[in-house]
Length: 176
Image (cartoon, rainbow, N blue to C red; front, side):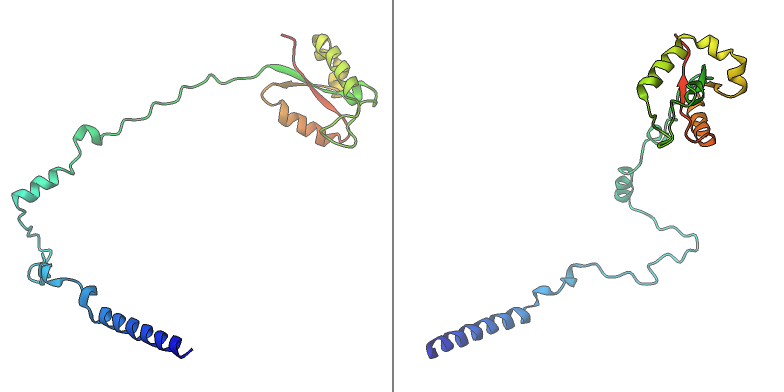
């Protein structure tokens, strides 16, 4: 144990000596003798309109940063092509609940239907007889069939579902 204490004391003493030698070294100091002297207040332009003359070498260096005039002009982006405004096509929104005398409904979920097979069959029938349903005065007057445009049918469908909860509305497009 005494031997180990002696080695530890010797090692710590040597380490402390090395650290003190490194701390006394001036290697952390800046080499200020290589720097040019700081300008005095007489060297600085007072803002009276007098410009300092630059050397020719300075002017040549500045030309490196100049941008040619044609590169400074930013071309205008081309305008996007204008699409002709789509006015939409006529279509129908049909209240399938009214048309089926209440057997088809969406009482439990506004976006679902209780009998998808019956809806598909009725939808196909209405699509095949589109003109008949589109011109039926009784269906139009009680709002079972609602004429609509293809550009606004989605918001109209949402509005109809809110006006008549539990009724299932279906968009019907004209045959091609």
